[in-house]
Length: 235
Image (cartoon, rainbow, N blue to C red; front, side):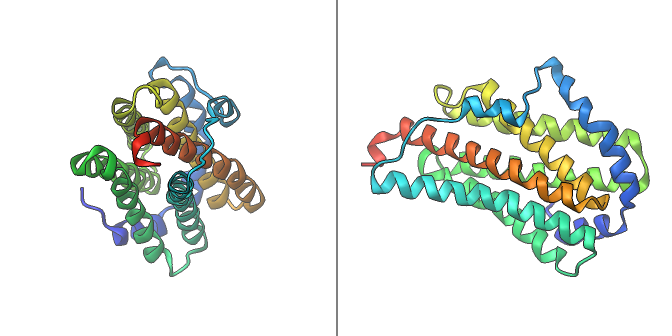
């Protein structure tokens, strides 16, 4: 399935908000038992926060660049949700920018893991976005089985992203840590979407604070892992 912001836009604009909110309200808690793995809350993720402190100019710059990439990820996701909920004309441009962010993240690791690895990460992250399209299409149709199937694939894709990263840097990106971090990111995004589309704007705004804090933790985990794995590149 090719990235198509216009398709995403049509699917979202036609979506019945009540159907989405109803499905999310039912399905989000079910994530806790996926693959019989322990579900970690965003608060639990704090114990994985890295104590690595960037010191050289190169380390500080890389740390900040990684934070910007992942802040862009949650910022453009939120803007996509909000522009959809408002029926704003700027949704297509917002969705296109969100999709471009996936390539930006993939490109950021090419220096360390090679071009093929960067392309693979981009492909996995694009699937992360595109599967969200299927979730919305299923909600539009009121097709609960299709919604559930897409949701399961969305979380499976998050595991693939986590496992890909862990395989690249198993010492500093343990598989269980990466999987828990990605699951929390998906859970938070679903809750944010449900609140915004359901018209509970105060809750949606409040949702963004833990989303932002969590993604910064993830960005720091990624940047510190790379700096520890390749210290000679950050003198």
